[in-house]
Length: 333
Image (cartoon, rainbow, N blue to C red; front, side, top):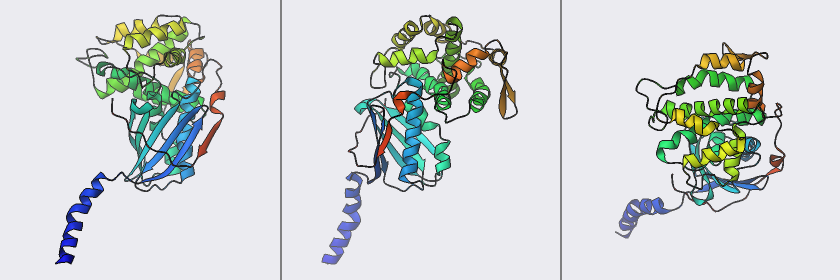
């Protein structure tokens, strides 16, 4: 009888107790990028990649973001990796509560090559560098992360420039307004949220360069917003962020373009724009036309004002420390 009762207890109560136990954590480590600390934990489960390969992946994403902004956006961030089935990276989410938290899924069979080609972690880290917006302005958050991600990786020498421009030529049409469109603030489809937001960013970037004779770009606006305290841990009104960005560039591009795109469809002739920029699609790549009217703008957007893919000095001091850290939990925006 005692054996029966003990077995019954184990069968009924022990699974319930397990539900309330914290998940096992493996492979904790810390990466420093300049003065920023990134704590990484891998939830219970297994990964095919080694600790060093996982660390290289996180560091590369962080360095690309720091290269674009001049430094990493927050002083401390926790990244929680959850192993899943199969291969690849997915289901990334970024939160402001707790000082900065990114959760992301990595397939158990993901290889080092898969991590080296990943864009999602860089995309999520870019969310750290812009304030949280109201739901109707979600497009600006996703648009910045979508547009800046490949540029940041090119500038950090992690991606080829022709690949970046090919992807823009291929994917930006998804952001154009369709029938029934009511502007970015009122059309919350996937295409308009991600690629419509990216279209806004590219148009703003080109126009800022045009009006400043390539002395300023979108990164100057975004960096100033971040320096003014506009990161994911704070809730801002969009107009505040755009006004700060315009002051940084000295031209009223962001607020003017927002007025044109916020509540009505704004048509863009992308084919004509690619010709002006000197980007010509050639199969699954592009050719650059260096005598195109906006070729210098294309180079400045790609590499920054120096027109050379150099890393920021603020990211050169990066190290990894394999040690445990207590996790901090955040809530979804």
